[in-house]
Length: 285
Image (cartoon, rainbow, N blue to C red):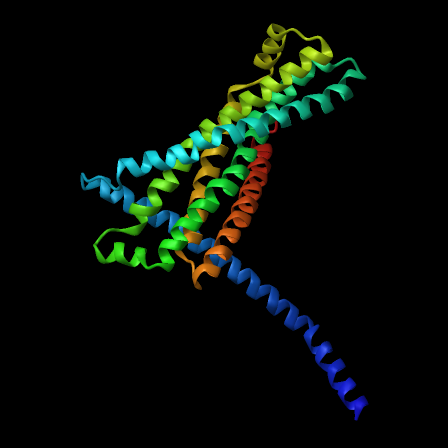
């Protein structure tokens, strides 16, 4: 009798590893992923459409006080965190690259390396990750709590569009503040690398600035700004979408907040990789 049970268990295990079942499971995961991506895309599109339509009617889409409140939270209050992290990373980057380049007598390349690396890549990426963890989680928790307590339904019952009233000011605040925070990140990292170059490689500050100015191109700055704008829109959209699709009470709010941070960071890194790949193909030099 025991052998019969063992045979049945082995058979069910064999069925679970059937290639058809595996492919079906992968297909379901892929379909769920595409459905989620489409839902977030239309969420952002409907928010912008509702906001623009309100402006065309000659009416204010949301309160200016709300917008400035979120810009203060997302921008001014994030400056110390962004500046400090970028400063320390700039120190580390200048030290590690400087000692390696000094072996070949090319330590003068350190200013340009740090400036280009942060302006085009690390500045927007680090700022996006920090804002996704700090501001994105807060937006998701706020909107999720409003959803659970049925405040969103009350706003709809009053004839107010929740997308333009709740989502638009948060999303636009991140959209407009991201380039500013990325610029602060770049300045902090370049300043930190100038201290390293002065202390360890005896490089004058004026000479350091000249090397940075010679290395940076206009397209490097434009690339960083474009990335910042994209990341701000993505983080704001994902955070608000997760907040307004909460289910399950307080536990659902916690799960949505965690999902918002993980999703936003993953998507930001993925979009950054895709952007760099396309940029390299069309602009190889």
